[in-house]
Length: 324
Image (cartoon, rainbow, N blue to C red; front, top):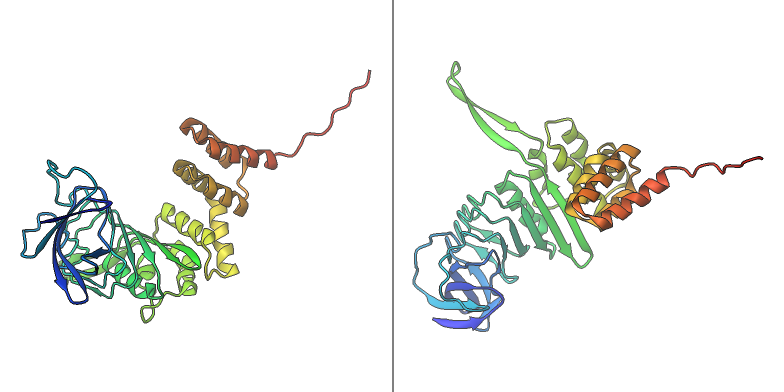
């Protein structure tokens, strides 16, 4: 087995091919890890079937050990603790059940150039909700795949030369309920996320179509915290955002100011809090509640912003005169 130095710990079984390397099996003991971009001077272009599935049996191929420190004595080399995974930029194919049963995986980082996903590639990745995508113009195809595969709430950050866009796709649940008198099953969809997960036309992302789903969603069963984050991130990363849609998002945050302030204070996101305070005008009660939360949690930067907002909200007292 060849040993090479890297930024993470991996035990790999690979196959060299004329134009790239296929990783047949990959196991790490790290919680955050990035698969190598190149091996033997060739780009990593494919992940084999069940490549990262915990408990994957040994396969025939060339062994590679990548280590950033002492690698002996670690028992949990089965991806069971993997929470954050970066795929290689040159990756083109992901095999069947490639990430099957990665139960703790929460975040996946990749380019939109992965053109083929095998069946069940993300099956049983029950915590996977966050995606960071480097875009080359094919992000619509990738998002259409991810949103079609995963019905849960998705938090997607798209990055290209123009900056970033962060989109929230609300959750929905498909349920088959037995209808005994009619001797069949009724198919029902619960939650407001179904239209968001299927808003791609010819696998293209259209921000106007995405924003047009906002008002219908509010009239349906939906998660208030999810709606608040969706509105916030559309305003903060407003690519393709038309003025009427921006006004609708702003009105929602104004109505739910206390929850929005509490969320950003809890995240200790002072920059985000400053942005929100430029977008809306919270009342005295939401500001007071947010100040109390910032004090109790030690979020001093957020507290300073909130106190300044309170000062602007309360008009200066009238000058007092005294006569003797």
